[in-house]
Image (cartoon, rainbow, N blue to C red; front, side, top):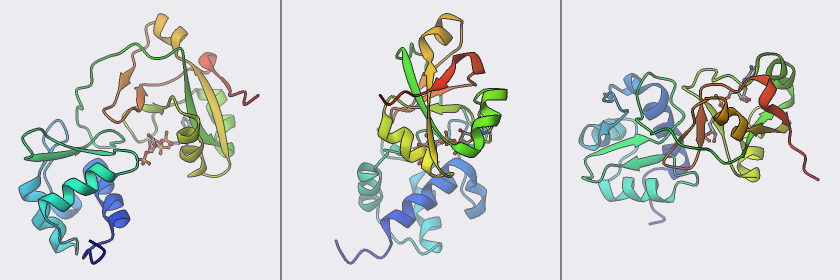
Length: 186
Ligand code: HQG
């Protein structure tokens, strides 16, 4: 297994790019729910230097640290579980969120967030987590991490909708300022 003809981390990043943002960049077609046919994907990956079998793709999907991708039950299709910027419908059902959710961001966004609230930016939703270490690592991607605490229970009571992705990320359209505070690490 150590002689893999591709780098698993690079491949995972490339899959994120093509399954969430730019399938057309390699000529891949996604259906309205974001699924790509694996029989179409594998030859396109090969052209990009990622020469792998179905089983190798399945093992990349299975070992991904954030479970970013899923293979359909019939094993014909693959999609990203969340994080898209292209218009597809993941079809997640609305769910009651935990009372508190976290959002990791960077210090440079704080002023704007406390003016406008948390907005979805280029993606379909604002992304929230139940887990402090995930929030910290998400925030660190853009600079010095700051953790925000979201009063999801009150939002829910006020009619805001929440969705839970297959890989455990909580999604909501936006979080107005009233429901945001700094996370108190104690
Ligand atoms: C910030 C990762 C200014 C927001 C994670 C974030 C996640 C604002 C950035 C997923 C703002 C958007 C998504 C406002 C929000 N003014 N900045 N009003 N509202 N922001 O990458 O949540 O590792 O689109 O705080 O696990 O960081 O890629 O969203 O810093 O689930 O699989 O604007 O990406 O997954 O950044 O991350 P993003 P995110 P992966």
